Length: 102
Image (cartoon, rainbow, N blue to C red; front, top):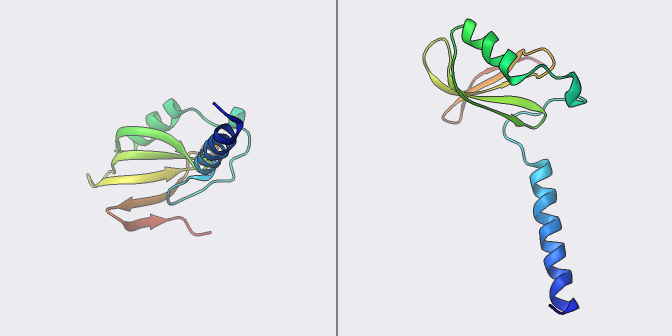
């Protein structure tokens, strides 16, 4: 490849990578170093004991994002603080059902 093709390609890859770093959903957490986070397994154990059914857990915006069913059996997307496992937000089909007061 010539230099005129490589430079735009490098710029494009850099922009795409930077966009993914800051991509987030509905919530963000100031959760610090991941070594201080509780594990996904601890989160799943806690919320299942509270009546949740968990389909998927992922990291998003420094929070744990959970897809599943809440204790009222509603299919939801929820965000939890990875340090405390506190529920921060529950949403369903674009509607916010619960949001922790700031």
